[in-house]
Image (cartoon, rainbow, N blue to C red; front, side):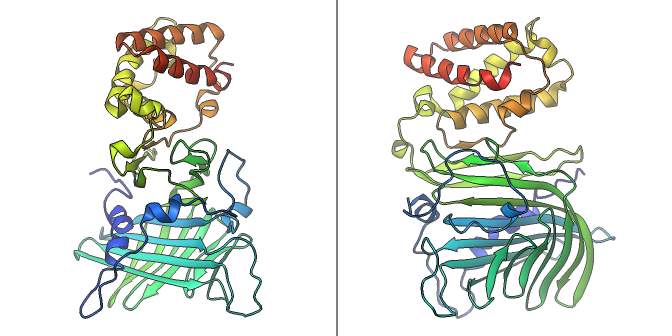
Length: 398
């Protein structure tokens, strides 16, 4: 069976921790959330810096905190196995939440404008158990915090520390604990547009986002009286932002795989509150996801079969073409203001070295026009699509 790290256990940990960690057990009183994700991330929050445009990632500083932004997180998930094949998934995530902009002005040692929250979860697949814990503390008196050099983020005795591209993870709660060493097997990936991950069409509704998509892991997991020596692979996501969600947007769903062929595809969908709450974006006027997917279904075969352009796909294979089509759909939907998230490479990087010339570009535009005419796209929307396509030329034609 193909190994797909983060496909089952770790994703269950990542999605389930918010449900189980705060869910009442026994005689504990029920805790009802009073702030929705969209309220926490959609507020303008005057005084904080916002993610407005791509900017170069800078290390080691970007491994550390960005207190001028409202929110950020260090997100580790992975799949582990013992030598005998026993499967364990884990999640360890640290969040920084700014309470107010600017520096602390009170003299008290307890004073802080930063709150840290962490989630820790382990999925015991063989035992059919899911263990989830959470804790929070203020950035004062050494209770919690983060630093870039040396890299460290912690809440009490839960921590991730190393040089950023490698880390030692430690967390324990009662009879459940982990102590893992992680190191990046691949270079950092700048997600979205050179590290700018847009979550909506409005300026500033975005985050700066990078990932280490494959991190071999080795160490110890303790489950009750059992101490398991484990190894496997992990994934680390790193984001910081102030206002990530726009009007009519509720949140997003994230799913990622680590495949045996060395690829690490990821999918993110933006969840809208309701269709009529969304702004009248080009995405909506074109007919939404199904209409844009139909455009991609029509356009890509035209390109691959063209005698001038076919050379760019002749060594891709069916799987490669299918992946490219899905990335094209995601890119078009996200660029048109839809509730989807593009996780592919930026245009300039993905077309570098292909030798695409002016003649290729003109042939490509002819097929784009033919596809839009095939679907009888209205003139206003057609003009907007062509204008957007033309804006990409500088990153595609050499």
